[in-house]
Image 1 (cartoon, rainbow over the protein chains, first blue to last red):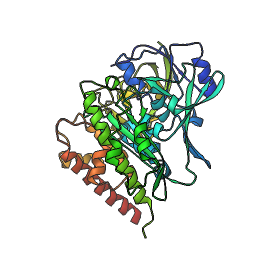
Image 2 (cartoon, rainbow over the protein chains, first blue to last red):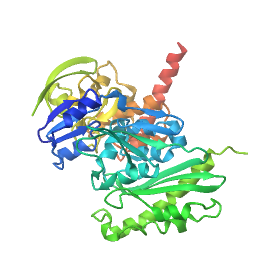
Image 3 (cartoon, one colour):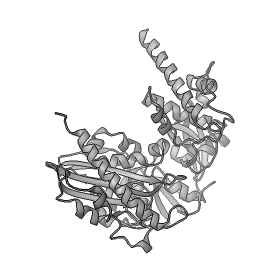
Length: 296
Length: 165
């Protein structure tokens, strides 16, 4: 299974890559290639030129400062899934990266490629939505910072322009409250992609939910926030809140006729899965919080 | 189509070669250089028969362009067989009947070797998780798990013995 013919250029720097992209609407960025190469083999993508940014070292790695953690676009799933600090502070991202594919895929695929690709059934869209990411892109006019809530537009469609490159993601660090989170999914038995995946990120202070971001992929044509669930969580005490009741409204804002509905799972089944997996993700997030508290 | 002159090191030997943009690494290794260790199975990054180590990490060589590997260090299962005796992982796959037709075995061995480097004493769940990207249609996996457990034990024993020297 060979991809169709194309030209290949290896970019030395981000500016070099931007130069190669400019004026060539048939050009596509590649790094790990684990979304793009399979699509090229099956004929779903036919770029005229591949611009390989995989060797631009400045786009790799995880950096912490006082209020932000920055993850370079070329950071692999494996690096994210193996990072103890991320498991500690941003577990929703680490767990979603761990759930992607298998170890060979995680060794090669990158967070930037995943987010730029905008696959509705992938695991990271929900996680970066729940983690309140800022998507950092470079274009001919310089840097643009996009709120993740404005980034995913539809199936394989994002806010990233054709002449722009996603260079990294930034996640806010919590100042006072304790952050916890989780990502759980019902994988397709054949492909492992998410029939439904739910990501949860909670800030908890003194047993009370200060803020909540809950998002899902697999259910709609792009990753979506589940705001009715968030509304049911904020301000509640962990001792009193019923996650089953909160999760029961997970599909309330989602139009059923727009839900993913295919040979693998009907829209009705996915809507049911969404509630079950929302409850499970909330339980996992709170279990993780309990596990990290010092025992008396 | 563009052609590219690339340099890759395979199992310690340096190679210079010319590849098309669209040549997949597995085909460059097998058809142009004669390293037939990695097998072509599904060609869609599902089955893992083409697993190699690229700069020390297990990857599926059907989903890497040869030109992307320019300047890289590749290890195939052939690097295990170049020695006088079998590697403990190969020995254990043989002893525990971790294969029948053998088509998946090169990939299984490459993934196992990365697992045991990272985690010398994996439990059954960790072994099954590490091998989730390698499909076998013969064994039902039970004996593959046993083979990995046995190989891990042998390699730990060897490492301990070397540590005592």
